[in-house]
Structures are given as structure tokens and as C-alpha cells.
Length: 269
Ligand code: MG
Ligand code: MG
Image (cartoon, rainbow, N blue to C red; front, side):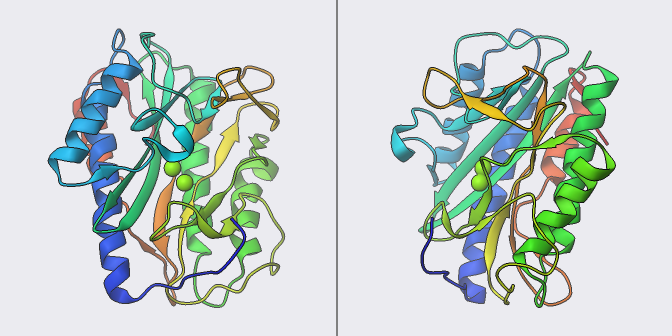
């Protein structure tokens, strides 16, 4: 992912917004169908149809030979889970990561749903991980440095809350490619790293573990799992660095609406 950083024009940022909004609308559409008994492969089909019906292309399908539209990661699976025929059940947490390509531009976002019956300890992990994403986004403004973002996330998730922030996977620049420079770690030092300039578009995506921060890749070559089998959470927004306040291009509003209306989901807010 090392290489040129492409700062985006306002027009390009609007195109990335369209793609990013479709991503979170897709995650919301999927959320309508999340309940005990459904398989992640069922959810994947719903997502692919929804994306194509909106004139876009699923960005993950075929990316480095990934086979599906969604990454579906249940419980101790952190990210990159491959949809399968196993049913999800009460008490599970399910991370949905999704990307689309529309008008040549990528959007990327992720959300962790909690099914009814999820224990309090795990609910707190989800809540804190989501809050850590917004702490990071607060720092994604002109004049700050990349390390300020990671520091803010790590401070809340690890130092204040005692969770494990995953080191092996990071956020990224995004635009005409799914993964552009720079890398955006969820840990770091204040005042260090790349200076943030107007028009930098990045995906910030804290992956936070209830226990040990270390992860391992499963035998399928994709699924990243916690080393201690404890739960993990993942939230991701695509956003543009601006003066004073970042412009969040994806939106969790449609997802939050679905959570309110789906009795099988537990509201983390
Ligand atoms: Mg991403
Ligand atoms: Mg993603």
C-alpha cells in the first residue's frame, strides 16, 4: 500500500460519498434480515443483489480472489470472514464489512451487529469500538497528523478500556482503488506521521478485541480470528479530511434505523 497519495477534488469526493452511502445502505439492508437461523451466505446474496440493483459493483468479490460480496465475521472472527452456510444464532455478534465501486470510485464501511442475547461485556466492547472510531474521526482534520488518529483510538479502546487493538490490520486511503496510501493504523503516537491535508480520503476502521490484541489467519486463508477466541468488534467509515471537521462520507443512519426496527437485533447505542 506504500506509494503515491492521491488527494481528491470536491467532485471526486462527491462520487466517493455516493459509493460509500450505498455501502452503508447495503449493510442496513442486510441488517433487516439478520436473525437467528439465517446464514451469512443468505446475507451475502441479499447484499450482492442490492448493490447490483443500484447500478454498482461489489468491490470485494474477486478482490485478491475473495469469493463474496461481504466479509462476515462472527464472534471471535475479527475481519475477512467468508460467508458460509452456517446459521448465526442468538447471542452472536456479526461484523459486516462491505465495499462498492460506482462511477469508478470505491466506498468501504463496516458495522458490527449484535443479536438479541449478546452479553453485557460484549455489548460494551461494541459500544467502545464504535466510540473509538468517532474519536479517531475527530482527529482527521487538516493540520493534525496520522498518529493523532491512531493515538485517539488506542487511548479509548486500549488505555482507558483495557481491550486489545489489532495491530496486524489497519485503515487506508481510498478512491479509485480500494486500498490506497496512506495506511491508517488504529494505534500510534500523537504528533507523529503524515501531516493531514485537505482532500485526503481515508477509511478508518478500528478492530478491537475483548481480550488479547493478537490475531491469527484461519486455514481458509482469509478469516482473521482472535488468538484467545474472545469476541472482536469492527466499525469503519470512509471520510474526507477537511479543515475543522472531517466529512464522513458513509453514514450509519440507515443502519441505526434498521436496528431500531429489527427486534432480533440488540441496540448498542
Ligand atoms: Mg477498509
Ligand atoms: Mg471495509
